[in-house]
Length: 308
Length: 285
View (cartoon, rainbow over the protein chains, first blue to last red):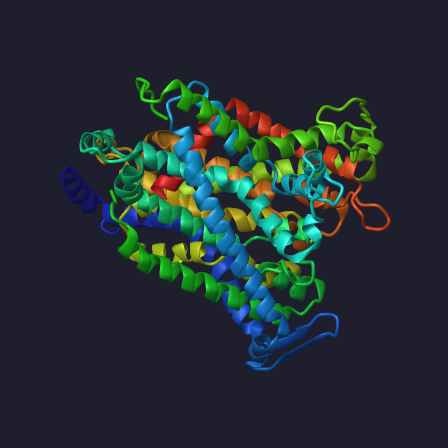
């Protein structure tokens, strides 16, 4: 190997700074900014959030005292907890199911060889690049009792509800708004996966007389399963972080029906200034994400049939 | 999106049905943007008209002047632009250096450090928002743009970028670098002159999603920023409210249009790069 020869040559001139050592130093320098950032902005805050969660810390009252697991007990007994976890679960489940099935449908449609199909790809993807809050504001305008959606419904004789002011339709609205915003991203991932499926497999199946459904079930789904899993992970973890949509559309209401975990965390910590309690909710969020990530990692072994 | 000879397997009838389905499905993607732009130029009395006017019959451009009168909107626009620009360039630098080192340089503890960095993917930034607020408060940086610049470049949001860059550099043939090494190029030289120019597709992907992420940040600005002159666009949009905290719809929609349209127009012209770039990160990630 030429590297070894070079190293031997260099080490005779500079006994300490061998090629390996210099290379290692360069390696450390290259990763230093990222590593320092992770320590400073992720690991230390994570330690602090655990520390804070053991304290009663009310900025308004000026208290900061060690209370052990009192915040955790308070959280477990919090009458709002059930509502918050329920809203979070409904949002995540609704989002994942609706987002992934629509994304797959759109990907299959825009994968057809049709004139002008790229126009549709562009259209379905375009909300991804529209500012999130701008998109959400338009929908809150559209979803009002006298807004555009109900205006259009009235034209065909349906009088629509006040979408954002009654519990089931408020949650459904938040999910729908979020799905149309980001489904293009998953569509593109599915499209790339679909285009990676070898044509010959379909041709062979067609020769064998397999129906379109059988082809989809027996060829497409197994072969794109890594992408299904990837989009599922991205979508679930993303769904747990939803905040701006809730803040703009419903402020967690009506009642607690759309108060998801991050919104509750924001309310407790930054509106009611209960930083210790907010830290405890942060830990709960962290645990949920960690458990889901671990579960998905395990699932990977079972449902993924094909990987490069 | 590869080009192939069209499969002529669809019958004309199936093709018409397909176009019909695509057009119906396109409505929820197109209509909100159309409604935002058209409502922003309607007189206030027309924006809730029934039946809804799909094409405005009367125009009132004064709302666009209102946008700038009610808030320092130009300043807020600039805030969002320059923060997103710095974050994008900074993330490209940090993530390509780290991604290259993890992919190509052998150094003791590399795997362990990579695991530590990957923790950033596992921990949503919302989890650490309370301590981060306290830290920046202690450093006297609350109500400045530093938290919105430093955390995304160095913290958890750039880990995904580092991961994408690493995956890309791993897939790059080693031979190119071996030759450069023999020619006496330094590690940084190899990185800068050989690896990085080849990594343009991955860099473009990193740039696109970093820009969109920064442009859309909402929780962090409302936590860290308190005075309107420091606000970023997403935060500013929600401030167009009347004395009863009810939204001033026409002004809000005009401001939303000014926020959304520029990026949308850039996207329409460069949509191939956007879509392929983001598909790339998903596949390699």
